[in-house]
Length: 101
Image (cartoon, rainbow, N blue to C red):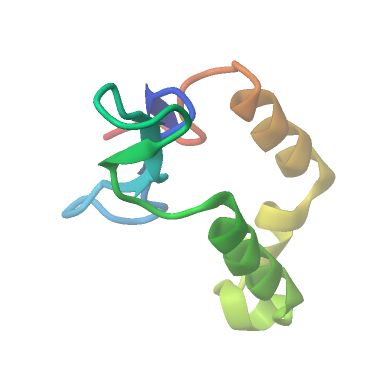
């Protein structure tokens, strides 16, 4: 994971693709309209919301593990070390969860 614009734009590595190695997540970004009334916001970059990303993650975690991973990947994905590894990287650890090719 790479932060492109803190709080708004992120680059994520695709797990198994060399043709399309990354995905971008763009969150909606607004700022104060300098020409509008106080408190009026204008969209700088359209994107998704925290709530929608959380809905995706909740839906994904509710599926049986066999439906969302291929054989053998489930154990690696859900092992306790992976959870702490991902959490560490999200909090300023190494830039990526896998080495780039």
